[in-house]
Amino acid sequence: MKSKHIGLNTVCTHVGEVPDQQFKGAISPIYLSSSYEFMDVDVKRYPRYFNTPNQEYLAKKIAALEHTETAMIFGSGMAAISHMFLAFLKSGDHIVVQNTLYGGTTNFIREEFPKLNIEFTFTNGYKVEDFEAAIQPNTKLIHIETPSNPLLTITDIKAIATLAQQKSIVTSIDNTFASPVNQNPADFGIDLIMHSATKYFGGHSDICAGAVAGSKNHMDKIWNVSKNYGGSLSDFTVWMLERSMKTMGLRVKAQTKNAMKLAKWLNKQSFVKQVYYPGLKTHPEHQLATEQMKGFGAMLSFELTDSIDSNQFMKQLQLIKASMSLAGIESTMLSPAQTSHSLLTAEQREAVGITDGLIRFSVGIEDVKDLKTDILQAIQNL
Ligand SMILES: *Cc1c(COP(=O)(O)O)cnc(C)c1O
Image 1: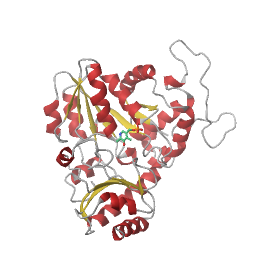
Image 2: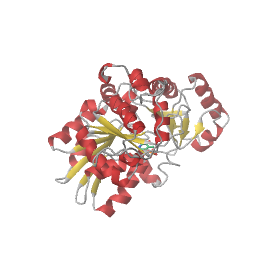
Image 3: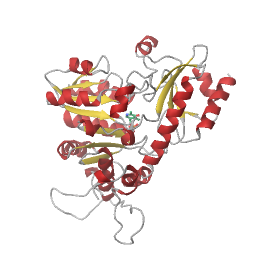
Image 4: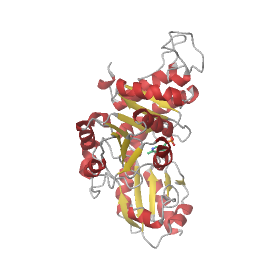
């Protein structure tokens, strides 16, 4: 069966299983060997070549999920993103990046690119005109992130891909927040789809990994660079990741359903000023999200009314954990002003809409009624 014709949960469960020739076990055997029989001068199996049996097969699952020819697995989301950038940018080149990027990506660009003489422009906004205005004659890559962190803005994937194709610029997207369960950017013409597999792919807050998916032609370029930088993932973790990904469809769909219910509920609460969730009709890009997403995802943000101290609120939570990371099966919250965006000044934060009362909510698989009860008791105990 071609993976295009089989359902999401079947892809998650079965595509990319390493066949157990020896014992016919139900799951993929794990091959921890770092040394393999010599095949050819150009074809060697070696962990840093991203082609051990477990690496090679799990990449097939990721490619099938993202509707691309091929994929690669990395040691972290940042390894995936940095190797991808470095494969398409050299000294004198220019990259256009969305203004609201994951903090680690922003740091990588600001701290490493000047050393390499790679030019970059952060867009003024997330509309296609903002990207167009930032393009230069030496622009080689456009990188977007949608839904964005932490305000869940939606960038028009197809419009960006079309703009870039007209100018022969390669496009990449950080698809971590949506996951392939809710969004397939390759279907809209994006060249490279990158994930922090630490998030929804792993899903249990116990794996650090990354992935990039794309055409064979583009991925060959990334492989050539990545084997030199060496950001591969250990086979034990690759095997753990395969195990986690079997339930990704089930998990993310349940989380997405919970997020929709909670966004609607929070929107009606007197202690909430505003809810940011692309699934709400009041979201400015709700229509666009409906066109390019299969589901609206399990990340949302909300702003508490001015009289509430967000820190005190989070301290009162008993079930929901105050946590830096996201996308696990357990619900977590954080205050972007005090964590991910704390290095910005209060004015800079205000300018991008990140107020002190803003809370980012990574919705898990718990029963919605228990999550509501926890939020209500935290408000009552302030
Ligand atoms: C976590 C994250 C990353 C970085 O991934 P790591 O696995 O922590 O290296 C990149 N992009 C987004 C959107 C993330 O949430």
